[in-house]
Image 1 (cartoon, helix red, strand yellow):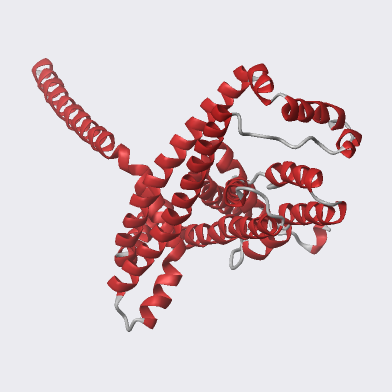
Image 2 (cartoon, rainbow, N blue to C red):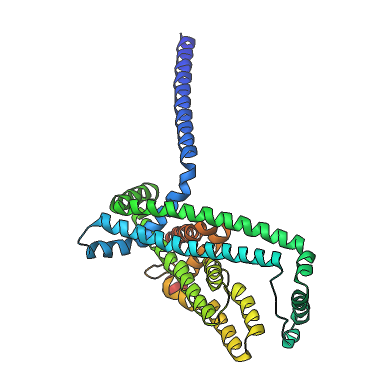
Length: 364
């Protein structure tokens, strides 16, 4: 009798276990399929969230100015974002294509002439003699110099082509992300409540504070990293135009890219300053070189003014998160890195505060 009951219990247990296993497997399979289907749109959605969070204060102000018409405000912000993104990209692309076409035609016709370097170029430390020799060779026999470095030029050309392709793809992604951001602006309150509910379910009563901290971090990075990068690019563009540097817009765009990924703009402005020294008088060239150094270093003054404002997170944590995120995951990591690091810093700080005994006068 006991054996019969035991066998019945075992069979019921196996049936229940098998049913639970099949249900869990079905859920896991369904979730996996859903993630596989939406995977191409995850990056677009994340960028849409970041953009909408960053511009929501502007959306609120514009909505108030328009008499509470949220849809019109969101539409105008989407249009402004598209213009800011597409117009400079179109101008830079057109300028680059035209410059490449002109160089190719002149190379075929033999119409390219390079002025010989000034004698003082050879006196520059470290690179002076080598640069003077290559420059002189280019002025005398440009075709021979090109043939001499043809393998290196082919490699550089391939890298440039890949970079152009990645840039075009990135611009297309940003276009769709801007439309996603416009839709999210119209449901910002619902999205905020949902985010708070999810964060509370995962982190308890601190969920809302973590959500608010993530929002503040995204806005801080938008102003302290992207905003500062735009300021540096504008300053660099002004200096390049004043010095009549060819393709000033392209150089300014490169400065913007370097500043966003937290690399010094002097990587671009330094070689340009060297070129200016070779074609201009010493005084204006020196002024431009000093100005280039100032543009490259002004982020150390501007970032503390914007990063971490209104937050309890140290500026260094935000800056390390932006730099590490950019190195690990590119432009998207520039925003996600500070958010993840800020949340982790807060959780660890609170955990340490709970487990650190209070000091008394007797302990001192």
